[in-house]
Length: 467
Image (tube, rainbow, N blue to C red; front, side, top):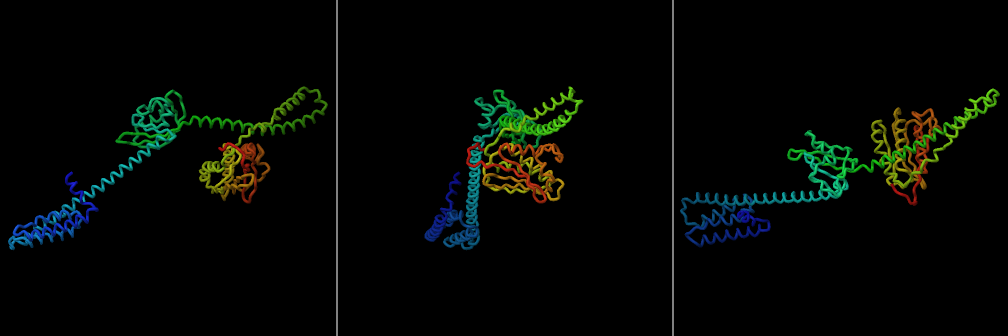
């Protein structure tokens, strides 16, 4: 400690001051040695050498040592016969002292620089820990860490409110009571760290069960397994998704039943014409079975006359078309790559709000995209371009493909037409959905391919719930 305090004077601020003091001391010792005779004061040169040793280079230190040794011999009354050995020994002593001080000062500077770096690293870690702690505590997603026994080491406020609102602190409790899947994962004997996602059953402290979406990873600390997890409650999202799916199942069912009713009405009309013609036959006038057939045809016509298309609910709101197209791009990019289809997007950066139902519009876009991808399977040029144009009152979304076009466009939107690959209901249902929120679906022939255009009304300045 005392040596460190002594070496603390060798700072950049004191460099000139100490070197000047060393020069003055050297001159003063030389004058005193010359004045006080026959006593030699040459050993006092060690002090200026010690002062200058912390700043001079090795070459300059040797030069100063030689000068001090020369002055020692110059003003001493020692025998001349031993002058050179004394000179060499004095030089060695002075050089050794200066170099020793220089190395001590150099090492001290290195230690101080290292300590400064360590302090900066420690402070940076503290800052990072504070930021990480704030991020964890303020996160709306629940965060947990578990040890190898499944005991909760850390739980943020969101985790506390999700698993045990108003109850005991989660820290120190077993995760098996809340998220059994995480408890099983951290207790697995595999040595390989892994990262994955899952949906599993979660249970709150009061016994309520919920669906948890979990992102977790395992890691090792001091030879023991640990697990870090982020999870959210998906119960409400699941309920909303199932309710929405049921609504659209009913909507599509109404549309399909309307198509079936339309076809049945056509058949009933033809059957009634045949029945009237047969009624002119005298042999069938009093035939009970013939009269019963008339009753059945009229009953079937009455049932088919229940037009369900008018019962399709108008589900629309002002939505952001850009986000719907972004979602569509994610959904079809992989299929386009697998089919070696060049996917082009010509979408303006800024799009107005449009009247539509988000879920229904995604289904329509997805159906049109899949139709185009199927049309390109046997095509030499495989290009699908999704183009958006903004007009005064409408926004048009075009799906243009190089699949060769459609032979009979008039049959496209008719259900159960013979040229369709399956039932021919996809375009029929898509047009009905678009029309349910005041839009339209059109076919536009283009050279070497086909184009389906979805026409959507701009929401303008009308008040609406933006999705």
